[in-house]
Image (cartoon, rainbow, N blue to C red; front, side, top):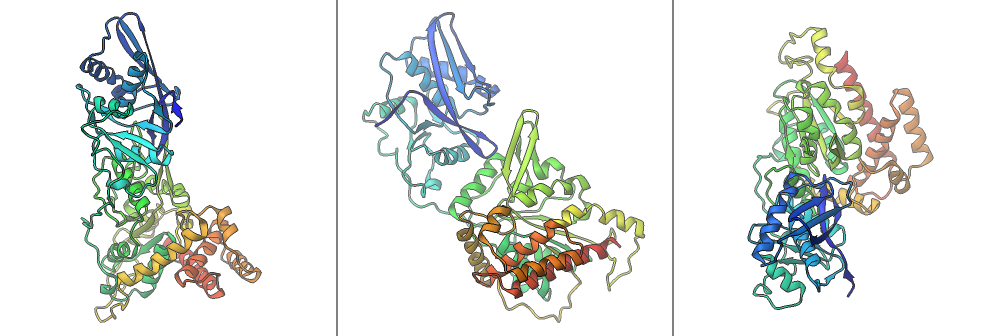
Length: 512
């Protein structure tokens, strides 16, 4: 067995983990305990916890200067997750015959004053990242670990206190040997959802909108719906969530970790998140922020739906912050203390009235807005945002005599799930057609010369941007996935062209 000379822990930067190497020296000098390596206030307070634990263990620290170094030294550290690792590093420095610690072992736990291992904020994401960083033995407090049941070849060792942890490291028997262990049985997911959703089969009419939403769900595309009050925009948005497939186990952990970082409550549910922030939300609330950046609504909707109702009432600056995340699937938060990147692979569903009064172009009521007021309202939704949206739907109120849909949400969800599985297999990663990197998309998806010529000609005639042209190709691949086809047919290309042309013209009519 290979032996490590250092003590390792794991730190978090956004949702990404980083290996932290902990070492300590103890020498005869004026009694003190110093922690170096850019620690925050909570880590500096660890000095008192470490000193109290040393007293509880019966260690003589009179006239001892203890120096603890957290490496890399130029990376800011925060939180109490390093407590156990720092205490162990000090004990190793004090012992004549230090404990031999196997390689790929890390310690993730906070301490109480009497030496018990305890939990801390961000514990679940930190353990998840430790597994991702290829640690094989992870010492943690005695917590429920069924979340990590599907991790292979990982030993999560749950210890109540430092004494038990040292005994286990030395290979000595412990009263807690029956509890330590290996991963627990399969996790139990919760099915509860706080937001009521409606089945697609209960919505009358809107056949084109329903088709667009199925394609959006299958390929991770974005939708903007415009229409008068009461025409069904919010109803369709709430129904959209019901056709998204359940999350895979790794996605559940990823989403749960984001909510832990944001200090937001979320049950261990297989259902994708559904976020609907109010139009008074700030830029920081949407994109993320804070002195030490936390995820915003974009990231809290990761693998799920971000529903922006009354888009025209959102500040223009807030709407413009959506540009980069919609294309990349990540939200980047820059602050003086550092820059963090949070995942934001979402389906954006936006809804807006065509004017402040809501009745421009309506058959029910007369619009009372002047052209100047209406254009100012709609100009918040800029061209670059529309360029990133695949479907722009102009909705009208439906009669109660309209036929109900025969396809239920359960049936449509199966179709979407099959389409998304095809994308995972094709790209070898959890990408949707909407956000897969261009290079990878071009490697895995081919079009005939006639199809490429058709798209290029139409894009020129309709004055579409290069981004819009690429979106046509991505959408065509999604249509083929929904049809469960290996290749992209001419019919799929034609439908994709129709959707993009209609989106461009719908936006132009709103701006006139």
